[in-house]
Image (tube, rainbow, N blue to C red):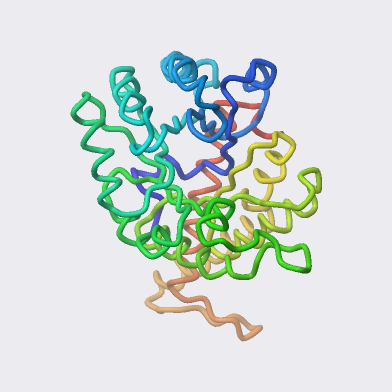
Length: 306
């Protein structure tokens, strides 16, 4: 299934979390070649700065030109905190178009947030991070809700919720997280959502490990990556961009299958013995659509190629 909302998120490969109260890091935002920015009022903001962070997020969601017109996702505080409802009211008044709601656990959590936004006159798209054991069990129902455009696994928070180590004795991510990652990927694919993962190398500077983890996620069905460290962005973009070889192979499949159908055949058997069936054709079309969306994004923002 294609990514939801008429493919508007199809070309998104990378989203970087931005610490909005760090002026030095914030000034670098226009030069970071991510496809999207998560402007945060939650984890990266200490309690004493919550109101100031809210005011700054409200300002910048109304200044899309600062991000070069790229995707902006505003992450509010949870409704159980003193700031969550005020965050939603302020963003609704500002006309926010895309938000992330942290620490959600059930579909009812999503609906409650949507109702609060709608009461304030806004109806934003929603990124739904899956960060707890309960949310993993509920992810299919969460992904099915209208206006949820993305589900993403948060293994750091999941490790806290479950009381298990983030890394195994071999220094790699705890093998326990493979099951939840698969569940999130299946739910996202079932409902055509953007599916995000974050690489967690033991050494943040180890770009080879970031690539390895990102490629492993892509093979599980993930189609984009999160990070909070700018040097990861080019790696993530590269991993989630179909290669020229992939694109050429997709074109071959499309051409051969369409020719077979035109001749009245349901499949193509090549001299090598390989058979091209309708599911191969659909995968090839999906890859081509993603690549086309990425190229449109690069035309709008030439710096995104690097």
